[in-house]
Image (cartoon, rainbow, N blue to C red; front, side):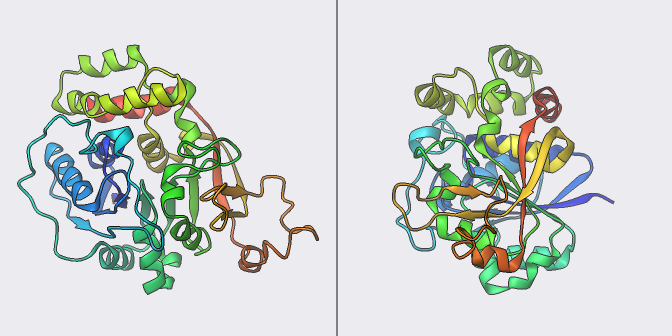
Length: 321
């Protein structure tokens, strides 16, 4: 029996590669793709998802969702991914259209119909938070919830404290972190350093000479330039595919631990910061009042700290051959 995936995405360049990995995995059936405003507006995110699905020769339904965060003014990341999210290469419009059901209802229906499924989130958590608000009990039906988001115990990529997916809708992220979903958090820092797709990796991918390989490199061209400006590192940083690799095979993450986690929603300085109780001090007298909503539910998330970079890249290569 194939494993069932539900993927929620703000489809831009790295999201598209992550979708390819899931759609090409032989033991996975992607039951639904839901889109959200994030890297690009939700209509563009939906178009990009549909285009990627067609490129893979798939017919997975795509459902459009929230066009703005729960409470915040929407702020995109086109400065990083390009105006269309795919590096501005003028890809043709997809022939398929989005399904009529709203993404929030699609999430609820898909989870209820497939108990034990794997939820993979690649963008802001607005859709998932709205689904949980409408039907809280879906949290107990998911087998895993792999979240690409956050910067646990390290610097962020949109502010010094926060990673974009969490920062853009911190209230939604807080709802999800407190929901009881079986969360596995894959922070953006795991995609840096040796995990970056460097020039020799790019040459290897292009040598596959497949449409998917060409698209994966080409659509990330704008992001590669932006990443070098941001960090000084040259190469393609792929946080969403790293998270997808772990969703497909959690042993690619080689060091994990479970901790209480919360998201900062009040401070503008640290808005969207993923606060991880790594030293297990939340229950100390000086902290327990602040952490009471988390402590009362006794909900911990699994945090991935170290990645097997060789195996992550092999998973990427396998999907693009």
